[in-house]
Image 1 (cartoon, rainbow, N blue to C red):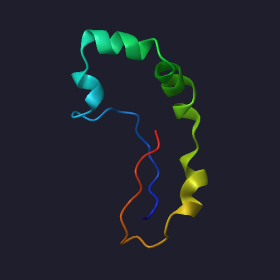
Image 2: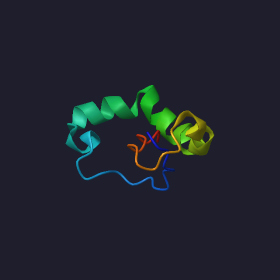
Image 3: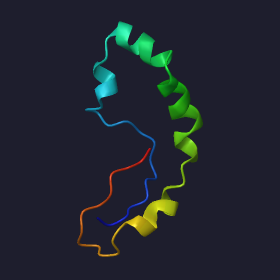
Image 4: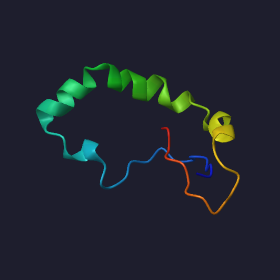
Length: 66
């Protein structure tokens, strides 16, 4: 896998979050996941993880952390 920095915070159109029911969304908002996504994810420095990936640009890109 080659490393590619994530420069976007936009959700994908097929994101599973968009298909949650109102009840599921309420539970999600009240869980640790809401806090984690707002207070931890934005501050993850993905470039620190680049050493874990191949320098070969022909290899598959990494999955985004945030």
